[in-house]
Image 1 (tube, one colour):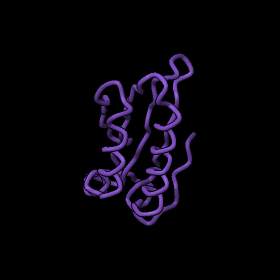
Image 2 (tube, helix red, strand yellow):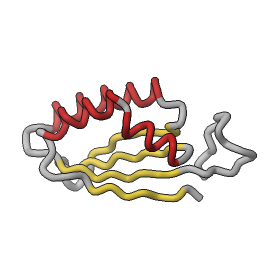
Image 3 (cartoon, helix red, strand yellow):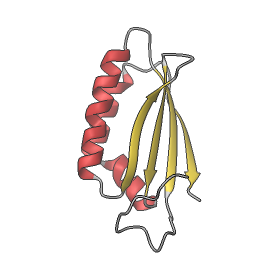
Image 4 (cartoon, one colour):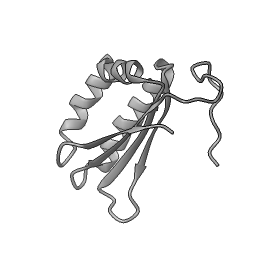
Length: 111
């Protein structure tokens, strides 16, 4: 069982949250730079977005060029705030030259 994080935006154990699962394929030889920039972005998200529950980068064990980003936000407004932030846009500009293709983004409803 995964514990519910005790934050003020949860209402009596009911989570009205949105999950995001992004699959990103990175160009050969670009992993180190991609990870550095993405982890800098992660620090910014965690420091500035109270509506972000978690934001975590994972590398595939079967294909080291493939990464999964697991994200959760308290609701649509928090997700929109994330996508509109200057640091997110700046990071995406840097990351665009490191990825092999556009990311595959899946939106999920928390249960």
